[in-house]
Amino acid sequence: MVFNSQMHKSDPRPLQPQHAHARVPERSRALNLSLWLWAALLLATLAWDASGADLAVMATLGDTSGFPLRDHWWLKNVMHDAFKQLAVLVYVFVWVMALRPMGVFRSLHRVQRLEMALGITLSLMLVTAIKRVSLTSCPWDLQAFGGAAAYVSHWSWGMADGGSGFCFPGGHASSAFAFLAMTVPWLRSAQPGEQRLGLVLTGVILTTGVVLGVVQTLRGAHYPSHTAWTAVVCAAAAWANHGLFLAGAKWRQVKAASRTPIGP
Image 1 (cartoon, helix red, strand yellow):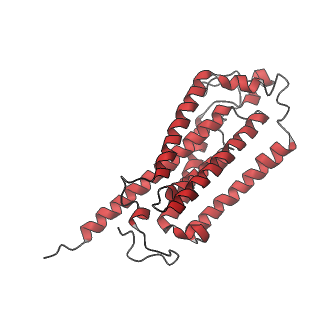
Image 2 (tube, helix red, strand yellow):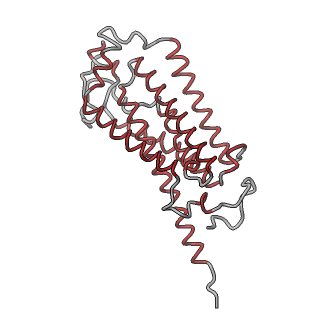
């Protein structure tokens, strides 16, 4: 399969079929595992929503006077503010690696590196877009915790709760979960070492996202479901982005085949 007539000078090897997505039906075990994990996460998140446990959890962390940990210096200044800045630096780093790869990034083709960077961008944009249209307020805005809002499920689209809104899903957790898009090319690789790298990276990203979500829950900024839905949305965006790149690869394959001269 051919993407370009000449390879980019920063690519150390040709774009092999397993890296070019030429064999779309073939998937690695690591890729299949990640898809099953996403399906399990989706079902668990739906079950959590149905249980109505969000308010019960928040009631254990705050009362009518608010949330004691809302302005805790470590949670607010380090785990929220500083980590947000760190996430921006990592995002810029991924884009630099997409254009001028070093280390493990050199094992990937330029198209795969762009898939990573664009996938992260798509995930962040999708979470932001949902937040812009959601009227759901944060827990610390509820009357039960000293605010002015009444509780309204985030499934009640278009129904205002009397608060500031724009709190669903969890934006801070997306600072980690958006990077799930980085894992797909490595998970899909035919090389066991690259698959292991993808799995390790997936574990690190998920753990970090959960920690960031817990931080915001402790502060009263987000329900647990907000974090879970952020993970679901970011993972779905990563797979959608991957699907677009697969479609592009197939289109290039067909186009290259149509240009191949037919023998006498």
